[in-house]
Image (cartoon, rainbow, N blue to C red; front, side, top):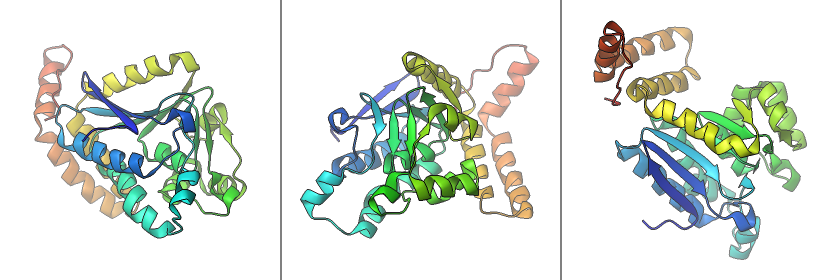
Amino acid sequence: MEYEAILYSLDEGVLTITLNRPDVLNAINRQMTDELQEAFKKAERDAAVRCIVLTGAGRAFSSGEDLKARQSEGNSDFGSTLKQRYNPIILKMRNIEKPVIGALNGVAAGAGCSLALACDLRIASEKARLIEVFVRVGLVPDSGSSFLLPRLVGLGKALEMSFLGDEVGAEEALRIGLVNKVVPAEELEAATKELALRLAKGPTKAIGLAKRSINRALTMDLDQALEYEVFAQESAGASADHKEGITAFAEKRPANFTGR
């Protein structure tokens, strides 16, 4: 598939997916959601992809749904839009057993904010802002925000962001747990690359199992979570990466993990 609304670049095990409509602050149209769905499916199948970075071209991460394009299409069916275009992306991001980093270079609003929340880790430029902007146009948080936001920042803050639609700057986002790290704008690319390479060189089989276990634990009780940990640990313990980790520890050398 030829990509236009996104860029797809793989280097040293790190796949960078860049939202690429900078002239409209990476507003999300049908072409972009189609390409994102395809890109994440491709990344899941490709063993060479060990870590995924999602970022935006230009000065924004994403301003959310392209409302002008939506109006021009005469589309008022929000349910179909979510089911066909957005929900498959969010589910794939949360279920893909590879770490996904959001590199927030600027504003992440509406569905763009939801995409950021669906990442496993978020590094923000000091210029980044996250906005649950839906209420400003009489809508409700979607694309996973209602599930992910309160789990990141707590119920009270999630309701505040959803009810008021106020922007959350990078430093406040760090303070409330909405992002993992804030760096100067000019250092975002380097900081993201450093983290992505560290993850890509790690035991990605175990990282994927950890992601699966933690995702499932969000809707389990303790007994169920403990039981699932047994399965996950047995799977990790049978991996080549575990064997390599033990051997490297005994030989007092860095481990050479392969993700198997």
